[in-house]
Image 1 (cartoon, one colour):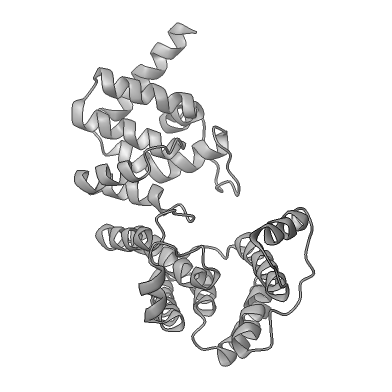
Image 2 (cartoon, rainbow, N blue to C red):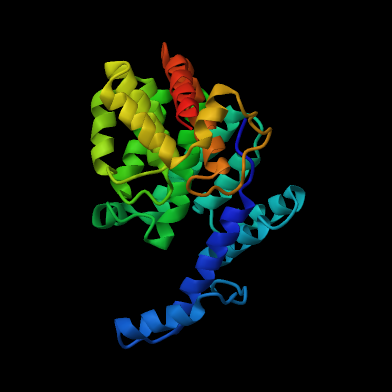
Length: 301
């Protein structure tokens, strides 16, 4: 089943569009003037105005509006947007996100990827590889690739999903979209140890729950119960203690996933377990190891 429309995400994107629009109206003489202007904008809600006069800008504004409306009304605005700018990837992303048939959703995402690529042009990829997402115009294309990869993963097309995530990281090594977490889990599922270890090196300072718990499981798969795997699991536990209880079933997973997560909180634990539980389940002895660890912790307290 396709992902639900992410209204909050597009609302944030609209705010960024307004900021870029306002910056474009200014005539800054120095970097300091720009920084001062941005500091003054912090905490203020900019007036939502049409992005511009071109058909492309009008289409994008209609798409932002569509996400604030019921789907029946949103579709009408998307149809208008597609007439104004047939190469706007966000139009097809909208339909992909509301489509209940995952195979049809993939079709929409694939069209979104191709139209996004066409809209950006070859020169954008040559000149700005490694800096995508930081360039506002690339975001629809990057969203399309993320949506496509998520659907491929949901269908069990793991190798194809891995390819998508890896190419996204080449375009945007800073990984503002957080695809490294999904990629790491998939690489472990596919026993692709070499690529997993390379990914670890790229983000060696990451201390999120899913990252460290995946690393602990990888250590266990390689070494079994060892000093290294035990220490890594302890590090993961210190990052987020809630994961163990949800992983072992001591706490029940909610029917709906949390909208926001915070480092070390239960929402982060829920998101972590949702993405990685099957990986732990398929690793022989992993839950027993986790249970023994939990028992030892309780005896120490």
